[in-house]
Amino acid sequence: MRALNLAIAAASLLTAGSAFAAGIDLSKPYGDKYGCINRNGQEVAADQMLLLTDKELITAASACTFSDKQAQADGSLVVTAKCEAEGEEGQSPTKFIIKRSKKNAKKLVVTDEDGHVMGEVSRCK
Image 1: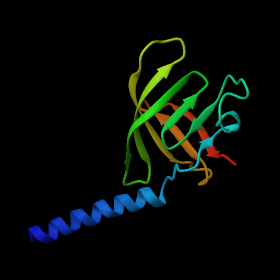
Image 2: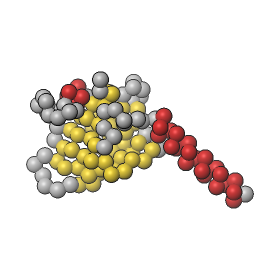
Image 3: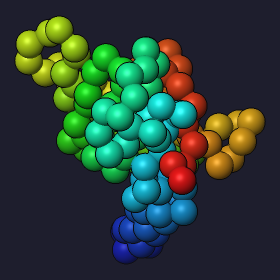
């Protein structure tokens, strides 16, 4: 019985890994209009900007570097990051939830740990 439980647990882990692989792929950047324009450096000034890569989340006022990504059973991704805000010293830890948009499965929605939607992003072309 114990071996069966271990096998089920291992299968669950593999399934979670598969969900991550099939779910949210950040190997190519996602962004809003200005995030994608600025993905290679600040090319255009914008009050609102959202850029999501496999390593960071950048907004007009902050830059967050990911330290951990955890795939969830529902296909979402919980990201732990350290953020630097414009005009502030040091970094503060935070978490983000990244999930597929309910309106358009090709888009991702980025939410902060308080449930505030930061924005919706599309894969940059």
